Image (spheres, rainbow, N blue to C red):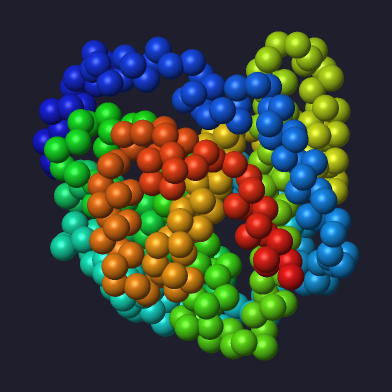
Length: 359
Ligand SMILES: [Zn+2]
């Protein structure tokens, strides 16, 4: 048992939270959400150009369409498995933790944050199969729990959860409770994505996986389509969810609207029975979209500052810790983007990265 943090008892009446409550929803959820999805709709148009510009993409026979799956409290589709199972052998379980810890060290970050991140990597009966991060005391005691199986999804999930864990563990201990535990989750999701997007980075793949140069272009093309699909799916979801809660569409019309929005955006057939199930709580889709934008902008900023292989530049890690992680979730994602990159959040860096992957 750990004592309850003093801030926890004050949270209801805290001035910071009061300010957060006064902010209109569009600022909390993000500007994307504010104008009934107009901005997202515009970007759906733009990314459809990217989707149609290359050669047609065909899923491998082995890629199944599967049902929705509950993960981390959110419904996410496993509708389309873009990843070829045959490539999983190049992401072995035995090498995962050591390799990724070594990479993090090479960019000047202690992966344990001086013991504050505790890796629970052993196997035991009943242990959940997917990696997750559990901040018990921020920043002093953060658990990264995993049961390595190997494969692309495992490596990606480990990197994602490590991004969260390091964010929590490198926060300034003197930050107010609200800035360590609450705030705009687009920030922590953005850092987690910055880490997990190394599996979309040619140089990183060459150096840290067994994929080999000849397989990387094909792998990246599949990964690029997966990224584009999720991006368009979440954009369409946000537009649909604003209608769902907006009160302007009769309830019995919503299933057809859901199918129309999601199917048109992704070109995969969605099912009307998911119209009230495939819904992220509290417009979390907006957080994901802003996190996506933030990670793409941060990646471009890191490349400008520390070169294409910033992830092994010993000067990059200290900057990430002091300019990004240490600030907790003090800022909203667009405020943070403006402070560290001097730019507004947008889909432009993301579209550029998807186009690179599609080749
Ligand atoms: Zn996450």
